[in-house]
Length: 244
Image 1 (cartoon, rainbow, N blue to C red):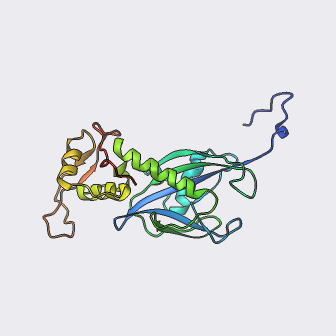
Image 2: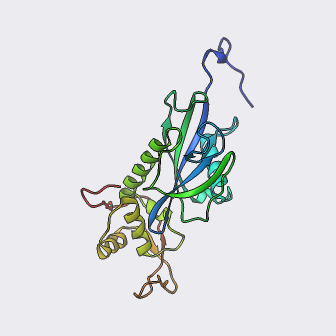
Image 3: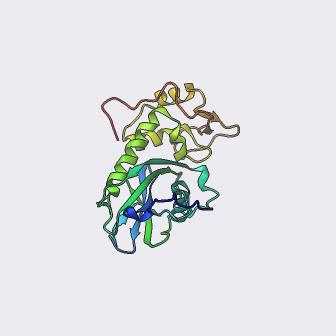
């Protein structure tokens, strides 16, 4: 139930503004980092590509709106969304960032395993995965949001177990290494990477059962799943002088 406004308070004394959520949704496809974009079906920026998102509804929190939009744009059910990594990035509130009116956006970053081709939700004309390294200009200030989200993910891979969020429930160490190489844009030494991962308490957990054949000529690789840890001790630092 809504509480009554305090006596003497005039809610019309301030200019109204809208609140939206914008989502930087990343996945790894064909050894490349991809981001989910939607083609805008209405003005402003009709026909331009943008991050998925939408307005926060009157009885909805920003987090709830982000989960709803993520489900709509990826085709996942809302029950499946809580298992994905979704974190608040920051708030974008420049007065002229949206030509329609004053709009404040709460941006989120989401990491998902490789999914089927997305569908455009709401007023979007279409949606697709784009190679994050081969993008043109985006609508609104979404170039800034996307750059901030990618920098956040690259940094967090050093100190957290976030990389496993890109992987299926059971994965090989080679697939995990591919996540790091894709996000950081570097090539890592395989034996050294394997040694560091297995020496980090709670990072990964071996899966019982037969190994998986990876498609190469080598022997089948053992499967692992994400461990119970959330932080890496010691951190897994990217090579010096390299960045995403």
